[in-house]
Image (cartoon, rainbow, N blue to C red; front, side, top):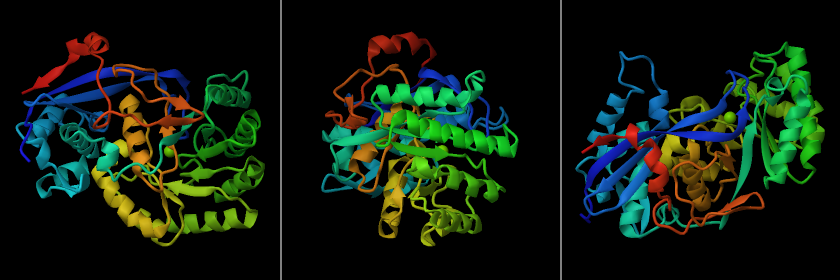
Length: 404
Ligand SMILES: [Mg+2]
């Protein structure tokens, strides 16, 4: 199979806007209302185009002494990996499905998972197949999504406090979402531990009341209960009426702590799943391996775009017999991340919900994907089914860096 060869790659920083101001999580300051989508477009001499985003690479900036997170570093990585290579040489295919990565690209795709998604997109276009098919075929025709933008919105509106989060959840429910993730962990950094616990509880109960009993409500503490398992136990008990669907990263990954949390959860009578792993940048690293193998977590969350499709394929195979669900994080991946996660979720048996940051449209052509009843339909196009709208793109074309 020697069809198209990659002849040109462009890199363009494109702004992607949130639908509102997004407040702070437990560990950082306010997120704000915009991010940069580092759009990568790869074109072949046969006339096809594949897409990905280099957000994760560019976020690794540590100063100009290193090429990580710089445009020169990105140019050399993309040149080395893709330029002058055939679309068909990256992934191993059997019966129209990707079954692995070719040995010479494995290291690059493991370290920079977002590049594997580009290889899938190009291959899908070349073979005339959807990436859903390349990943094993559809297991559902709709992928449910959850609104992940309920941060510490109470800090943006101190006059209203916890009620602000509930108001935003009600609005989101009206916009069609049936699942919501709330940032908690105020005891960690932003409030005194007891006041933070009380605010977390007030927020969770307020959101549950605002969205009604049938929606899924999750919490994510970003480790804000580290060292305070006593407060975490109070949190689990006091939020029991909210019937939480999962509790995410309540404390740092630690076998002893998770054993205690699991006991507390069972003793109190909570059914909330325990999920974590978005911080695992070399998944599965040893502590997460232990948490999975010892049955201490219910869901594992390496990021869709950071880990990439090839690595997630290997992770799924590993997780399958354990009963731990695949619940990839999708945060900071802009509009591209939603499509990449939609495709993954459509083909993954144990996938539950797409983490949706609800970005406003930016440079992608609107297509046949619809959001109804809290779920996205699948794109009918080949590859990721994603195309750039050249008229919209023109606005940013002046910032384009081209590699040939
Ligand atoms: Mg999280």
